[in-house]
Image (cartoon, rainbow, N blue to C red; front, side, top):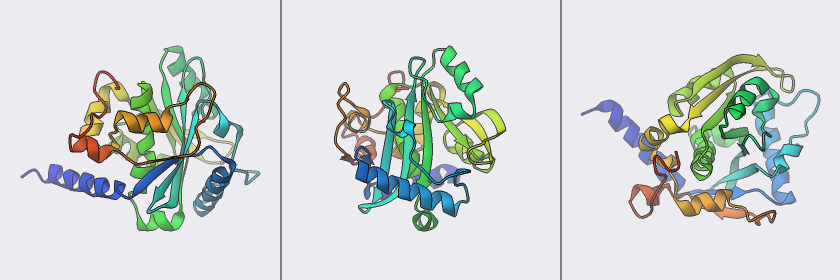
Length: 253
């Protein structure tokens, strides 16, 4: 028996079971944004990465037309949050461009589209008890890549965390160790090439997969009208059990 494969299958099975108790909510209203800001503050204070010169943890690009802020609820309790930007040559707003403008410009000048996750925050107590919370919280970045058919998923992370993204997301290092003024610490820029690794990623970690309905609930918007907050159940199990179609290589990746 291939022990490595059996361990990975067991891990994926545990994550799939955990997803049965997870809901995602797209944050749209002021009250939910206040909850997200409080969660960001608790998480960043615990990690000693509060912004230099202030504690305001909502900013203008939280409300950008290409921004998608999610709350992650586990047994109906808010446990983590992530913000995603869909970045295109025509709409270059992103968190990563503040630290790595040259690299982001190179991607966009080449005509590539990007998913830029930022503002990852997890409740410190829950993160200590549930170490797999990064997988749950970062899952929308892979759902977004399939929905938008994006060319890259970015990761601007502390150097100590880079190995996780290289291992889990097959990310390539683009820039190493650039100092940030806002946090006063170094970050690396990595990127996952979805065309090269999308199918492999979903095969290895099927809990990242999604059906069309989930993708549309997460990221669909009708013109300028914003939808009310949505509670979205992960569809990875339905894909794994063959009940619905997941992301398709050559179409979504």
